[in-house]
Image (cartoon, rainbow, N blue to C red):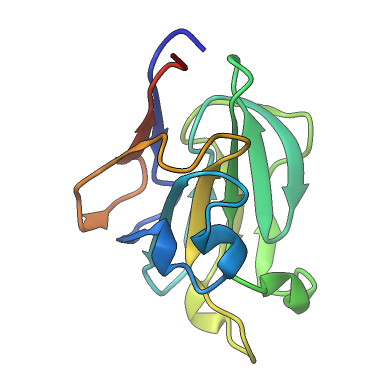
Length: 154
């Protein structure tokens, strides 16, 4: 990676430190560093946070692989895989080329509930060391705001 990559908010909501994610894997940055978004209730179109190729698409999560080999995971809620896709409408497919802001999934966080299920949306850079992103200082974000930047590897 030779340039700084800005990762954009895939949905509107309140920005949370990744450590506040109600899941130890995300909170411990085991998948990589990033942030979480407590999404606004109501119907929401979740968009690609960077430009690249969709290398994984599930109703509750997707990964965009950028041109520099940087993979960004957007995970719609915690333990939402238990919902078996019910509240999600997938708008894109694995292998699709996307721009930052391309719609990928539609859902309504206010319709999601269940035992041990959270609507918090972790957005992480995969396979990077913890603490290697520059987090936005914003409290609330709208879709398309920069939520963190990924500086070039030293």
